[in-house]
Each structure stands twice: as C-alpha cells, then as structure tokens.
Length: 99
Image 1 (cartoon, helix red, strand yellow):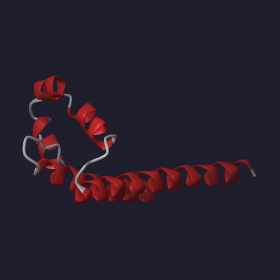
Image 2 (spheres, helix red, strand yellow; image 1 turned 90 degrees about the horizontal axis):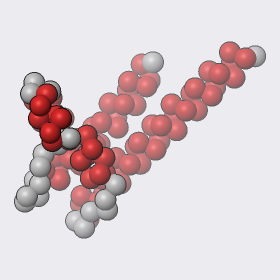
Image 3 (cartoon, helix red, strand yellow; image 1 turned 60 degrees about the vertical axis):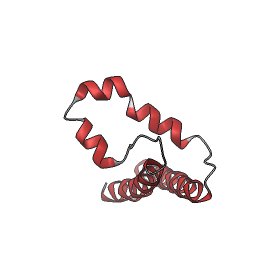
C-alpha cells in the first residue's frame, strides 16, 4: 500500500511540473495541484470548468514546444511505469494467495 502511494506521488510530481510549465504559456489555464485544491473550495467551479477533463485532454495532445513535450513524455512514461508496477505487484500478490 505504501508503495502504491509512493508511485502515485512520483507520477503526480511529473504531472504537476508539466501542468505548471503549460500554465506559463500565454492564454493557458493553470491546472496545477494548488489551483485544483483551491477549486475544491468552490465546487461550482469544478462542475462548470471541468478541470479534470481538460487535464486529460491536455495530456493527450502532443505539444509544439520541445520542453513541454519532454515534460509531457516524462509524465506519461512515469504513468506507464507506475501502472505496470501496480499491476505486476497485484499479479504477484494474487499468485501468492492462490499457492
């Protein structure tokens, strides 16, 4: 359980750095962790703004700026590695329980 939380934090750090860098671009909304925490204090903004849908859409679009693209790829790489580790750990746990 502690490992899954550590993997989640590791993934979140990469995503937050990508979202902070993207927010510095002109005309971009900020979806960094701090902004989302502030938005939870005003739930109507979460419903109207749909920030999570915008984050998922942003993560799926290749960026023109090489620095942003490298940050996006770092986040996506960590996401793949993290999910693979959690899945592999679950398989090992499942096999050990069946033995």
